[in-house]
Length: 197
Ligand code: ZN
Image 1 (cartoon, helix red, strand yellow):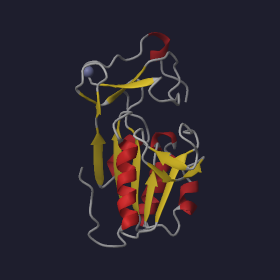
Image 2 (cartoon, protein in one colour; image 1 turned 180 degrees about the vertical axis):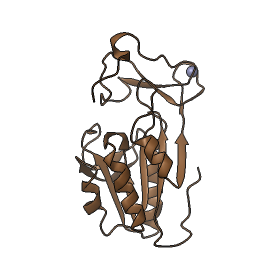
Image 3 (cartoon, rainbow, N blue to C red; image 1 turned 90 degrees about the vertical axis):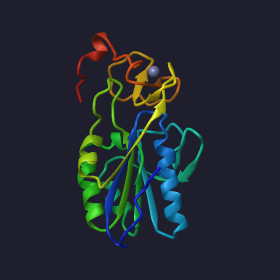
């Protein structure tokens, strides 16, 4: 997987790693952050408080890669956490809301390398803000693909296996699975109605 190599130290930019669940986003984020640490860059890592599947003070990938992180409730808290860092990693960015776009832009403008990982589609297969907006302003984009749990093809959708119209139900393999375009079944009935956000 390609990642940008810094052409000029002190230049900032935004990288986005996005895809469905089980596509290896967090693993790829951790890999890039580890490499920055090996290069002795100062790294700060945050994730939203909503995601406490695997403990609160680490990013943990589904394959059990882990790296220490700080929880935030709002995107604006990232600005002070990023002070003094050369590289900022943000996981589960889809939970941080539209404010995250401006925060990432400010950090990149200030010369920081910002690496953002998140879901690009919700369980209905619709764009999951603010990832589409971040893709528009990012310098580098990586789309990760999972494996379809039905047919084994490359998968870019997240199938929810339990009913419920809320956009966010935190959970892992007991609630969600990766599906390809062909095997993905958009929710029918009341769940298909737009939810209040
Ligand atoms: Zn399939």
